[in-house]
Structure formats: structure tokens, C-alpha cells
Image (cartoon, rainbow, N blue to C red; front, side, top):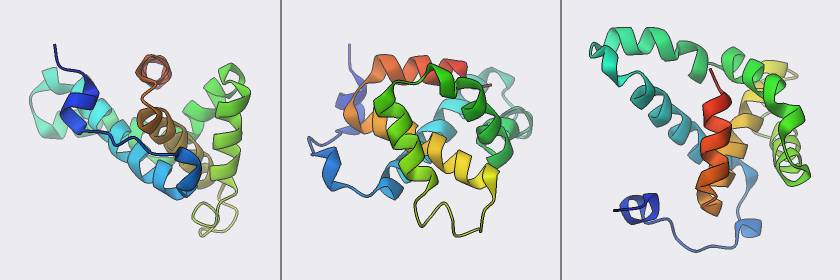
Length: 128
């Protein structure tokens, strides 16, 4: 059986060397793919897009982060907070939803790059 690392060839890197915005960039892609696969049974792309709108929108991601934040480890909360306070997250001013969505995306990207797929699956299963 192939693993995610076989398919995506995730490089062995020191995650401390990467900017937090990179985690958010990867997390956005992972969440988008996860969301589309989750509703793949609907067959019509327009139907899939209707269902995932809340998962991939800034307001939907913000609500999901609010809902799961208390379940995160201290390390995960630190990643989220760092992303929320990053220059990229504040470029829209003090838009709470945008900052939260950046935090959630960074957490997902961090877990993916860390290859902590069990925790990533747990977090993704909580988003709706």
C-alpha cells in the first residue's frame, strides 16, 4: 500500500526553517483537496463546490478553528497563533476571519509537512 509520502514525496526538512506562510499555502491546498474528495460522490462539480464553500471560505475556516481550538495541543496552538499574527494574515487589516483561516490553513500545512497524518486526519475530520 502506498503512503501519502510515496505519492507527494514530502521532503525531509527542518520545519523551523520555513516561514509560517508556507505552512498556510500548503494547508490551503491540502484542505481544498480533502474537501473536494469528501464530496466526490456528488459527481457534478457544481454540487461539490456548493458543499465545500463553507470548508474553504475564510468564514467557514474561521468557524472551524474556533470550534476545534480548545482541542489543539500547545504546539499546534503556537503554530496557529504565529500564523494569525503573520504579515500575510494581517494584510487585510484586522479581519478576524482572514486571520483565523490563515491559522487553520497553517496548522493543516504544518501537520502535513510534519507527516503527522494521524493528527491531520483527526483535525480534518472535525472540519465541516
